[in-house]
Image (cartoon, rainbow, N blue to C red; front, side, top):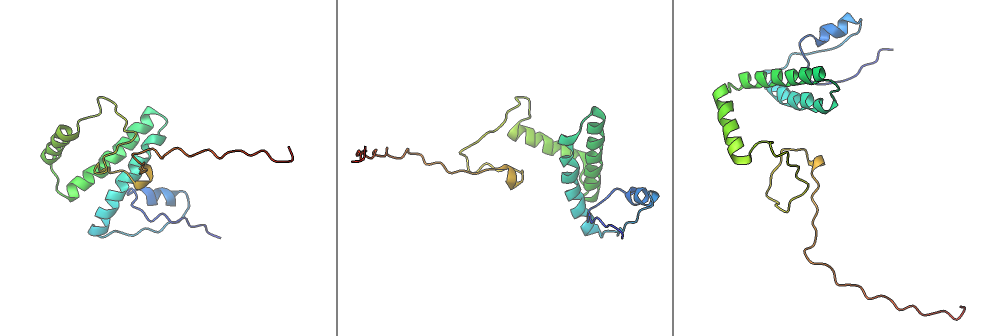
Length: 146
């Protein structure tokens, strides 16, 4: 019986050879240009999600190199220049700043603030502005059995 694990994702060029060198089988297909661009964008998230799991400096460097490689492919496919990236960085810093203050946003009442994060990390609560009126305490009547 052969076990098959379905990944359905973009992989590095040598991955099929690595699998076959272990005596295992795999199926790959070549993506269309449109599919390739979509999968590259997904790959950024996949590679970035590995960052918190790195245990050593070298693992961190390796994961960052993976991300840079994917970003370089995206830039090349979309013909994005270094000048365009530099301009965007300048606009970004001017509008939102950097991370020098190490600020951590716990909550905000600004419903117009937009985040790029997945919805699972954002919890939206509606809290009434006014406190409810205090409840009257029920009077306790001693029972006849007491």
